[in-house]
Every structure is written in structure tokens, then in C-alpha cells.
Length: 423
Ligand code: URA
Picture (tube, rainbow, N blue to C red):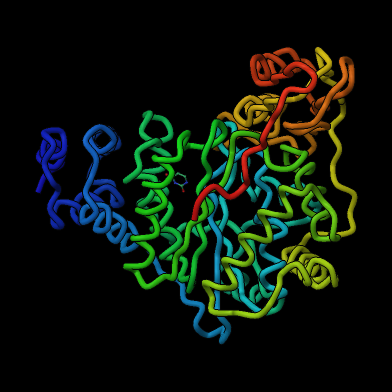
């Protein structure tokens, strides 16, 4: 077998055989297929697609490139949630301890932000002392002791995906449904969770900008999970405007703690509870209302124990950016648009995100939102507060908001998008 013939098959719109897929993933992981050859193949897949058999085999080959974890020794059902990425999407933070408080263990392997979307590990690292890197033994211990663990995936888990994702990121080949589906599902299946709830984001701040593409991605991933014996469900949720009132690392931790304390913005609470209900049902736990665990403090208790078990101090003050700058409403009327992508890029430029995988992020940087679409606003009132340690970047950050804030005439009717668009 050789790489050029595999590339030619897909370039000429052919179907890759199981043997070709197994060979190319294995040879790429070992370094026998070069990055330039794999990027040519990834571009051919982006342009010409793969059928379900090919996607399934590709996913399986990526799982077989590394180790598989097993949580059966825990003796309780397990469930995980994966979001395809958005702006202000801090849901994992309150969700994992909430589901744990309802008796389902949550082994949550999470990632870092890249580009305009935030990453769960970057957010949690703003808590003084908290560690994302755990050995497999440590991960198991935290899970046993606290019912939930949120940590980085070890190097052994789907290493083919780790290499391929980094390559796709710099070769314009991220946005291919077969490659996104196999990338996400290879990690989730290898992780060994018993059930999985996918939060497939739709809208300007998401990879999938329209409902039809998001439905295709969701169906593909649910099919891959189900065939691998993982009880998998997908919700399609709105990402046309940021979730909640914050986008940025420490800012989002603060908001998540508010949710765990029984408060927090209505959209964050609604989506957290919707995903928690799906996770409990997928894990076979019925008759428990996760809203009770927010009310009675048990979700907060699990959060505190989970953070402490990973070296964090749940009582420590969170970092605050050195400077703040308020963006005001330019007119009086109804706020009819606050674009997720614009706010995400703004937060990223303020220092909340990174331009390269090895860059640090600013813990305190980001955007605080004072009005949500549908609210009446008055000219001059604060709409956003921008937080950063590098105020020389304000102009660059504010440029990202151009066209992203829409104020319509007073009295204009506005129907906000529902949070959950489809299941
Ligand atoms: N997240 C992943 O893990 N992989 C992708 O391809 C896209 C989002």
C-alpha cells in the first residue's frame, strides 16, 4: 500500500477500502505517511466526502491507534457530554457536578479553546491550583471520590486524531463533516463512557452555520456512537448569540458557580438542565430532577469536591483583568442582534483565546454582556464590558464587534431563538 494511491482514490471520488483506511491511519500515526500526504487526503475527503462505512472504519482505525479506557469497575452508570464548541459555552462546568450529584459518574475529557471558541480546560485553569493533566489512576480516583472529573485527554487516547486535528487546523480542512464526526467520536468511544449526549451547536458562533449541516453532523455522530455500543443522543442548540452573560475564562467560571448556587442566566440554566436530563436518561437513571440538585446545594457540593480533588481552591478569588472598557449602546431601541462570532472573536482578541496551540491565555480577559437580544436599550447605556491585561489591543478587539450589534427601532417585535432547536 502507498499514500499516493490512497490519495488518488479519494481525489477521483472513489470509496476507500477498509484496508486502505486501516493502513493510512496506522502509517500516519507511526510517521510513515507524511503530513503533506495526509493533508492532501484530508482535503480530498473535505471536497468529495465519505460514506457511512468509510466514516465508521476511519473512526475505528483512529480508536485502534491508541488505548481504550474502561470505567466498568466504578459500578455506576457513566455519561459524558460533548459540545461542538461555541461562545460563552461554559455548560460543562455546572453540568458535570450536577449529573454526578444525581448518581451518574461523569468522565469528562475536555479540550482547550482555539480560535473564537472557548475551551473548558482554559476556563478551569483560571481557578488557582487546578490541574488539567491527570494520570489515568488519578482520573479514576477523582471520579470515584467525587463522581465527576474534567481533565485533558492523555496522549494515549486516539493519538491519530491528535495529530490529524492539529494538521487540519492549519490546512483549512477542519470543516468536513466526516472528519469532525470521526474526530469527536473516536475520542469519546475510546474514553469508554457508557452513554454520551452531544450538544451540536448551530449558528454564527459554531462550526455548523445552518440547521441542515448540524443535523447531518448530529446523525453521523449518533450513528457512530450507537454502532460502537455507546448510548448516544444529540441536541441541536442555538449558537447565534453567546450563551449567558460572559465569554472568557475566569468570567465564565464565576457565572458557572452562580448557576451551581441556584442563580445564573436563564439560558445557561435551561441548557444545563436540558443536557442533564438527557444524560440521566441516556445512563438509565429515571425519576430524578436535576433542578433539585441545584436547589438543595448537592451540585455545588460535588463541584467543590471535584475542584479540590484536582488541586484547585474553590474558595480562592478568581483572577481579574487589569483593565476594563465599557461599550455603550449607540441608539435607543430593541437589541435585535448580538452576534456570537463577533463576541467570540472580540474575547479572543482581548486575550481569552490563543492564536496558536502553544500560546498562553489570559485568565481574566473576555467580554461581559449587559443586555441580551430582545431587551430594550437606551442610547449610552452599557452593553458590554471588555476585560483585558493588554489594553493596547482594545481597538483591535472592538473592530471585531463591527456589524455584530444590532439595535432596531423602539417597539420592534423580536422573538428570541429557542435554546434547543432539535433533538
Ligand atoms: N472538535 C474535535 O474534537 N474535532 C473536530 O474535528 C472538531 C471539533
